[in-house]
Image (tube, rainbow, N blue to C red):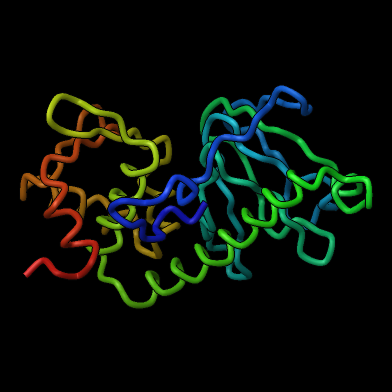
Length: 224
């Protein structure tokens, strides 16, 4: 979910979460703009994302919004904090979710394979959260956006001739609230990368990666 977490160039298959099998489990579909849960609701279910994209957010005491994470296929959302959900969660696009009841997971009769998969998902979330916090505190605005684009391209990018493209279902404001930037800074940084011919932008929400090596260098703070 913390899509700014760095990925190795030649990741092992388990590095990127696999889509959960939905054949034997209850599923649900969430339409864009519909909430899956709200912060403070009882966390009685855990969800694996089979398709689509979710957005997890919190509203701070001063009214500002923080986008905590985006849930992509293979991600798991709804891990509880003291028995409650600790974020709001809504769908950015039509999304299919595999639903697991917490009481079934916590019983001795639970599926050991599923337990192992969700444990790995929880550990990935902790690791991703640590990487994300480091990124928020240490990287410049262009490094943050380059990291965001690079990891999304690795996870959900599609080939386009000699290049790769990635569709961004979130708004520039969502990206800003995720990266700890202003919307104006995100827009300006997209323009900077486009003018440098590192990326091209098609129909606002589709980004084409023209120079992946240069994007990686920026993400790693080695842009010269």
